[in-house]
Each structure stands twice: as C-alpha cells, then as structure tokens.
Length: 114
Image (cartoon, rainbow, N blue to C red):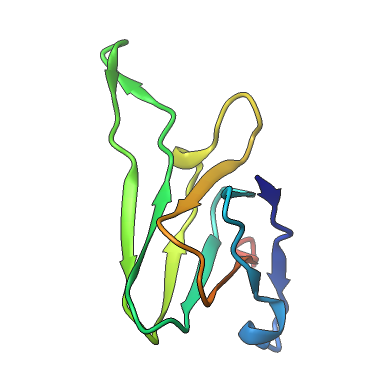
C-alpha cells in the first residue's frame, strides 16, 4: 500500500487536480481526522468502487462493515476520512479500489481550527 501525502488547503484555496496521483493497485493509506477527505477522480468509462476499511467492532465482536463508495465514470467524489477509519496499528485509513484504471486520488485537510 502506498502512503498518500495529505495536502493542507490554505485559506486562499487549492487546485485539486495538481495534487492527484494514480491510485495504487494494492491500495493506499491516508491520514484521518476532522476536516480530512479523500478526492477520487475517475476518468475511466466505467464506474469504480473505493472501499475504506473500518477496523472497529461493536459489542466486542461484531465487525463494522467497510464503507464502499461508487465513483461514477467521469466524476470526482469527495469522501470524508473521519477517525472511524483509523487503523489502530498504523494510525491511517486503509483504502482499496476495485480497479485503478484512470483513477487518481489525493487526501486533503481543511483547517477546522479557525
């Protein structure tokens, strides 16, 4: 899995496309937390599914289902990367894709302290 670098959006804004990188066939990891989201641009002719692993359990033994987000062909989706997706072993979200053809991604963080 490739470790994606989070772009902090400055007050004057940021060009989204400049930060996008090719999605890794083996998946990616990213920072999580308040104000963090994953931008997924699908330039393919087919839709693609992005899956965020949810490492938590309920009642001690019931696994929480992973989050699957379908990104339509030719569209860009913004997916919140809340702390819910933080893997306790790595401190990062684990992200996988059903295919990576023409899919680019980047995590962004908006400073929510202001």
